[in-house]
Length: 277
Image (cartoon, rainbow, N blue to C red):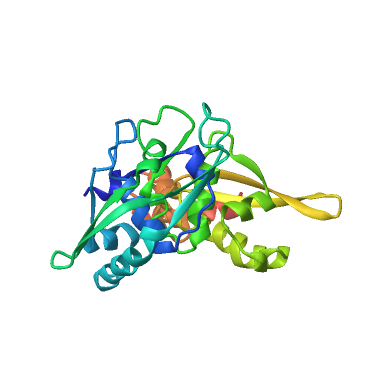
């Protein structure tokens, strides 16, 4: 697996869908999505292999922790689901679609790996995508440790050409499937928003800031401003300090020395002339 070339591509309906995955569940799903070609047809029988070794490299964890993470994830990921509102443009009566991420998990403990297959209903959101999709390099989220940072990063990457996005706070909480303990703005800010933004700024290829907007007296919207980080321009090496003799630079001595003068004699003369001037 060429870790640098793994690219995640999702239809925007899934980027904006309602779901909640643990950090390692997100990592497993993204590592499998990163292996497929989003322009080609994906079948429900297509298998995606993920080893503990690859998991460790992709997400900067130890080999020992990587295999245990895979085992723990497979216990819960099978039951995770994603909710898409108004999923079918040609079937307006269908207002809501609930579907699993994966349909099966094969365990290969002797090889330290698992093999996953995606669920049937999610295939159109991951393959043969022609428009309205979000795409990014997996390495840009690989070191994130906040479960909301990856989700927020994807929502911002939908608007990467503009560098600005405003979202309604209630909508964001719904899509992140946050419970009532996050209803207070200070709790939401401290436990979701600030850690996610800090994670993006530290580990991704983008720098993000945000402001809030009120409707009446209540804070209702968040406006994110973001831009791709620019590579640091190395500072030019300082020029070596020029040697001097008796306080006169060697370049001045070379220019003004008379025939037969030593450098010390020329320096003394030039210095005396400067004092007399």
